[in-house]
Amino acid sequence: MAIGQDESDVCRVPKPPTDLADTAYLRNGYRAILRILIAEEALAAETCACLLDDFTWDQALDALSRFQTSDNRRLPFKVLDLYAQADALEAQVVEACAE
Image (cartoon, rainbow, N blue to C red; front, side):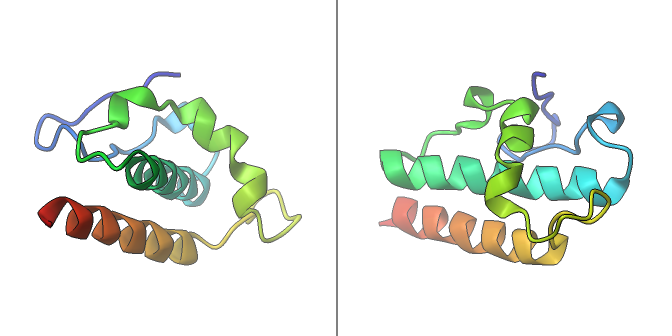
């Protein structure tokens, strides 16, 4: 499942499609997971290039087990924790690219 880009910021992970998950909570979690995956890859590759086109929503779904904190299908992770982790990793990317 390809990622559509928002015109306002071509490298910002857009809102997930509604068919990705039943609830906004899950979709927001998958968005945070994708942000984490992209930031981790940017740090590992030591690149400042936008890597959004290299990732798909399916990769976020596949990575669920890595971020899962509960067996509850409706609340498999803590979205706020995922957002904090994504924010921290993206800040590291910004800092590394500023050097």
